[in-house]
View (cartoon, rainbow, N blue to C red):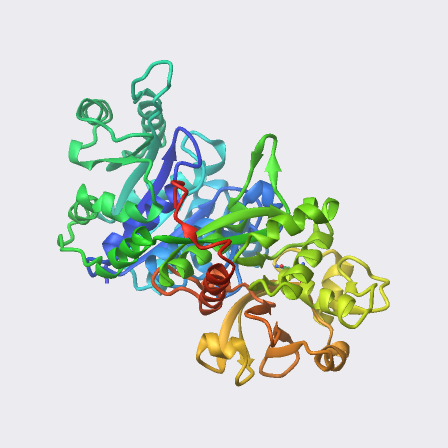
Length: 558
Ligand code: GLN
């Protein structure tokens, strides 16, 4: 089969939505009956995203085969409705690591190993392997960063070399920004022109320009870019800020973006079938009632800016479940550190919530506030879903406040506690002792058996599931009996019965803690059962208390 490669690069600045543009274009191509996969290239030297601080990187998305990747990979999975494997993610560090390993194994047969061509060749071989494994007609390859950065030069060189090798199989899209400076009041195309010139100097001519801007791009500007940059006018796609990211596939379809890509590759143009997608968008927009979902985590900020991307998949999973339940989720970011300082504030804020989530996390900052939050939700019957750390904190809370073990803790925080109800996995001790942190957590999809009649099995409607993990600590089996006797239900375990994967409570509308990250498997068209369970319970609480479930108020983007 013939593989086609569409590189997506960025111009002017980062953060303009290259990932969403790639995913949306991928969806529209797929909806025309082509098989599509997507690759993310991150130009940093880290081998994966796993060792980076969330402030540096945002969310670390975990693939089913256990890779710690960029959040864009999650966006591809959600739009393309497919699992993206490890081979579809690469960084400078990962590429160099392979080249150096191969050199050490004499695989270059005594040659001098050089940055060019050997590094781009490794990049090309990874791209080709990913396309082959996905049996993809079209592979989208998103090159992180923006053109002109020193860091992604070798990736652009690889793309250029691929085009030289087979001119008809490689095409380029530049997603660039067109500002409208308030003092000028006019959309400016010059930064984009410069970005395209820079791309030209890497030996690449873009075939398409996606113009990201606060408003739609008008004809004179399209004309100007077409003329100056040598791109056909109908290949200049206007991508103004959308009210919802889920509108972008339609925005592209209206401009026949995907069909023009197909034409460019010499492939047949086709009608798209976006019926299911449209159904989702329609349902999302027609929701009349709103429920308040509190996400209690630590705040990540740089300077004056708070980063909410850190919990991107959690946010998405809440939205998907809300749409399927016919409501709009109003997500409130609640700062667990503030709850530590002010229990009054905590009660005031939590009592307004219809449902609460404590997402994954690491380290001591804010953990006591999370434990207090869980206690409040347990006692006040507020629907609660604990994700990974949120499950471990639920176990600690139960041990402290129901069993009365005031010092109960995870050994991640207190190694000397007399009640280490959460402790390090046996297999992890060596990694920590050696300081071997990269890629060594328990990662990726593992099976889990559910207890019949439990809330979990009721939500999943099955007894065997597979979910994605990312943790070094685990429920301490020495405390299983004590915690169970005190009423904590263990409703999910690994098939060998070693790992406690799910805990829950009876006599509570919804109280479930999971050792895994269900958010990574939620998609717009297949919302995750546990998030749906939480939202369902949240809806009932909203109706009962009359506090939540207000009319849709926010005009915020979704
Ligand atoms: N810090 C905990 C652990 O390593 C939880 C990790 C998480 O929430 N992803 O086990």
